[in-house]
Length: 81
Image 1: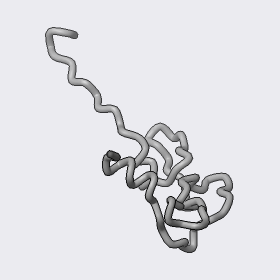
Image 2: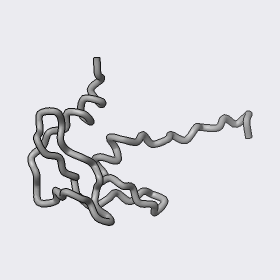
Image 3: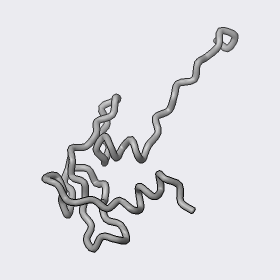
Image 4: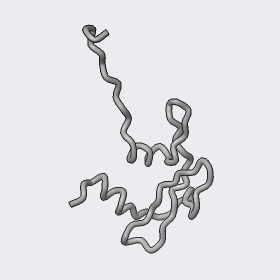
């Protein structure tokens, strides 16, 4: 049994849009569309997401959020300081 997040990654059938590309270039999302039901595959191609520290992801904001979880800062109690 696959969880919903894994199903979204594997069965990601979608029609091409104006950003879709066969091979992504610099600053284009590298997320691959195409599942078992889709004959061809292609890349998302949307502009990549820039993280808060200035580093660029290989994915657009939507696909970056799907792949990565942000770390929450731990609250340090007064006794630990």
